[in-house]
Each structure stands twice: as C-alpha cells, then as structure tokens.
Length: 429
Ligand code: HEM
Image (cartoon, rainbow, N blue to C red; front, side, top):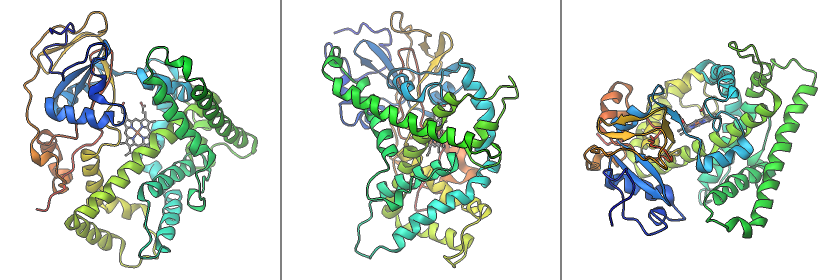
C-alpha cells in the first residue's frame, strides 16, 4: 500500500492499518524497540504514530546538525507536555519563548558550573558515605540491590544539594512518601499519554491517584520553600539551589523567580536528575563487573589518585583527577543512554542531511520528498564497551566514527534527537 505520508522516502518499518507503527514500539519497552529500529534503519527513520509522523535521527552527523539552536528548538509535545501538569514552566518543560525559561536559565546556569560543584562537594560526600557505610556492613553473601541503592544515592544527593532536605533513604525500609509520589506522577502521566480515545472515561481512578500524587509533591515542596522564607535567615547564605533561586536576580530583566516557578524547578531537578544519574551509575557498575580489565584499570586510578587509606575522604580536586573513571561514565552513557532521546522541531522549513526536507508544521503539510541519507550499518565496534577512546584527546575523531546507542525523538513536526553522551570507549587495548 503506498504511503500517504510525505516523509515516505525516509525508511520506516511496516505499518498496521489504523495503529500505524504503535505495535513497532510495543507497550513494555518502547525505547529499546526504537533503538533496535534505529540500528536497522540507521541513521534516520520515521514512525507513523496513528497519523502523526515521528522522525528518529541517530547518526552523529544528523544529530550534530539538529543541535544547531539557530535552526532547531526543543519540542514540548506528547508526554512531555503532560509533565507540565506538575513541572509547569520549569526548565525541562518550559517552552523556549516563556519568560521563565530565560529568567531561570540566567539565574541557575552559574549554579551548575564547576565552581558551584565545589560548593556541593561536602553534601555529595555526605550521602556517598551513607552508601559506603551500608555496603561496608553487608556480609559477603548478602545481595545488593544496586539500582535501588543508586536511586537512593542520587535522590538524596539532589535533595540535599538542591534544598537542604534529607529523604534519608538509606535509613528506611520503604521509600519516602515524596519519592513514591514522584514515581506515581511520572508513571501516571506516561499511562495517560498512551491512552486510546475514550479510555479517559474508564480511567477515573488512575486520574484521581495522579492528582493526589501531584498534590502531595506540590504541598511538600511549597512547605520547604515557605519554611526557608520564614526561617528569618539570610536567603542567600546557604549554598544550595533553593538559596540561589530565592535570592538570585536575572541580570537581563532585574527580576527574581516567583515561588510557583521555584516549586516547578525543584520538582524538575528531582525528576530530571535522579533517574538519569542513578541509571548511569547502575549501568556503569554492571559494565565494570562484566569488563574486569576496565575495572582493574579503574582501581589503579582510584588508588593512585586517592591513596590507599580508605578513611580519607576524597577532595574535590582529587575527584576531578579521576579521568579514567570519567571516561567510563561517558562510555556507559554512549552504550546505555539514560536520557535516550530529546525532541526538536525546526524554527522554519529546512533541509537536513543535505537531502531531507524538514518542515515547520507537519501534520497536515508534511515534509517534502527528498532522498534520505543512505543507511549505514552500525559496526560491531560501536556496540562493545571500549573506554580507551574516551580519552579527551581522541574524542572528536571518535565521535564521528562511533555510533551512539540509537536515540530517538518525537514530534509532529520534522525533528531529530540525540543521545546525551559524548564519546567514550571501553576496549581492552
Ligand atoms: C547522567 C545524568 C544526566 C543525563 C544523561 C541528562 C540528560 C539530559 C538531556 C538529554 C537533557 C535535554 C537536553 C536538551 O533538550 O537539549 C537534559 C536537560 C536537563 N537536565 Fe539533565 N541529565 C542528567 C542529569 C541531570 C541532573 C543531575 C540535573 C539536575 C540536578 C539535570 C537537570 C536538567 C534540566 C533542568 C534540564 C533542562 C535544561 C533546559 O532545557 O534548560 N540533569 N538532561
């Protein structure tokens, strides 16, 4: 059956009538399935999401081209638009044109700098030591739930550095109720975004639960902000993100962030920061255990930089000297990107890859026909674990040669995506 979609020259998996490519993604592991398709149709393909085209770009050159902010903007659509129900115009879900996006950007950017990280170092150590203490006390035959512990580590770290709040996850048998509310709000929103027409009518109980989770998050965060305001202390004194948000002034507008936006930013940091980072750490540990030669080299570096006395806590400068460990983390992100895609849309009609026409609005007009870049096989070397090439000097060259784990993106308009990783390489050589 000839395709009615004008993106037709770009390869795509076979479609099912009415459902389009919904079945190509499946219900349980859509991202993994998208990644498989990306390997098959590398470097670009499209999916028919029940009439709405979704173009997925994963080759380095195309992704690089689409990262040009003068031509492409982030696209807040689909599930991400629903996340606005609790993340509002926080940085992740704000439209670029919304005043709070640039205001928060200007106020917050310096607080993610290397210098700012130095200020958070003691808080990060505080939580890391809780993890080490827990693992130290286990018996040799005790099982470790690595993913659970990494989630505790990252959530507690963000909460402490973000707003001086302790979830105390390492001292609990069950999750802090706020943590359950975040999980509920995210899974409830994903479920909502995947509903079929009319399904809303029979999902009232789930909607009620979603509203309760969001209410719980809002009340907790609002309480933290209120408490800080009413504490009477100098708002700029503490070295956490909340202090910076309460006291920071956007130099461009002379304005501060209001409390509602600060609530959205706090929720955003918790959501954007915890699963990405805990997933990365869990995958890195898995990779290390499966690559003993890499693990041995990592041990060597840690012993050389930190010394052999485990009771001495690492300084910020020492952590920065762990370059091989940093390469391992980057390689892990290349292989298992924990933010596997982001969505973009062109500011106006444009050609990508020198051949494919990407148009500003697609649902009714579609992209004009063009010849897509020729598919290239993803080489086996791209899928193995090779940290050697993660060395900063080799990075740019390797970036062009090595495929990332395929990443995807969604948009009703022509769009593209990328993995966040920037080249590492795990190899024995
Ligand atoms: C391994 C860890 C992480 C990964 C892989 C990751 C990945 C990403 C990606 C792919 C984006 C979208 C970029 C874009 O649209 O151009 C993003 C945005 C963002 N991330 Fe992360 N992230 C990580 C950790 C964190 C942490 C720890 C925080 C906060 C504490 C954070 C906060 C944010 C925010 C606020 C945005 C939106 C930025 C904006 O649009 O202005 N992320 N991240």
